[in-house]
Amino acid sequence: MYLKSMDNAFSLKGKNTVVTGGAKGIGLGIATAFAHQGANVAIFARDEKAAGEVIKDFSGKYEGSFSFYKTDISSMESCRDSVSRYINDNKRIDVLVNNAGIGTAGRFVDMDEELSDWFECFDVDLHGAARMSYQVLKHMRKAGSGHIINITSNAGEIINKPFLTAYAASKAAFNHFTRCLAAEVAPDGIRVNAIAPGFTFSNFVKDMPEEAYKALCADIPIGRFAQAFEIGALAVYLAGDISDIVTGAVFTADGGFALQH
Ligand SMILES: NC(=O)c1ccc[n+]([C@@H]2O[C@H](COP(=O)([O-])OP(=O)(O)OC[C@H]3O[C@@H](n4cnc5c(N)ncnc54)[C@H](OP(=O)(O)O)[C@@H]3O)[C@@H](O)[C@H]2O)c1
Image (cartoon, rainbow, N blue to C red; front, side, top):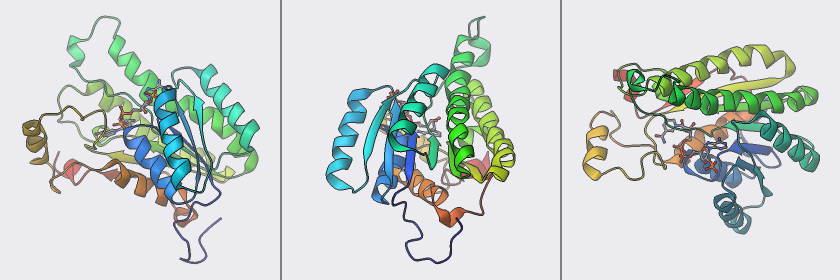
């Protein structure tokens, strides 16, 4: 449904949202922003303890309903099982955020001959989102509506960052998956967009020494890393009716880093 007024334009009240990896890092920032805007939030991840703590915290603060579905996105069976249990419990999914991912670093030429790191990276960061999208789209297409938001990376746009070849290639493919899928499912009333963050406070960077942080910030025009909640704010815009005209877009949110690389 398109926007008719700016009243409550950013409200997600009553929307059923699923966030993969929603108990940590950027996923937690997105889940928090959604909960704050009134959404029902389901965390699809593996770590039950971390998700349980988030659900307890949200339940004391926000009005929506909050749940956890143990899911390993590297398994189609696990994605199918979690999505079908969610649909049995809640009838529909309005918004899927494909956030869960791993940060594979290391030189391509130094990988083992099986390319284990390469395949693991693609299997989680790209194929995990494909599995979740496949399962969720069955239901969104029946409903004739829905939004998918993919969390890619500015690494999918820039080249001159060493030792991220597998990760960057998977994220570049993820950006294009976003565009192609958006065109494919637009006639079904479904939108697909991506957010490409740059350096963002999360487990990826939590043990970084101060000196290394400062050196990286010197290379970012805005001069700092993003907070996960800031990525969540952009996801709120994409999840709501306010962005109903937007599909197939990749929004870079990296303080200008990709502009100069
Ligand atoms: N932080 C950054 O600087 C940055 C920059 C650009 C893009 N990104 C992207 O943002 C996304 C989130 O990253 P983050 O920095 O927030 O990382 P993080 O703090 O390490 O969180 C990663 C999340 O992914 C989930 N996950 C990993 N493998 C999974 C699997 N097989 N099945 C289900 N869930 C899985 C984890 O949940 P469990 O532990 O519960 O499984 C965890 O919640 C990733 O796609 C990453 O590529 C991050």
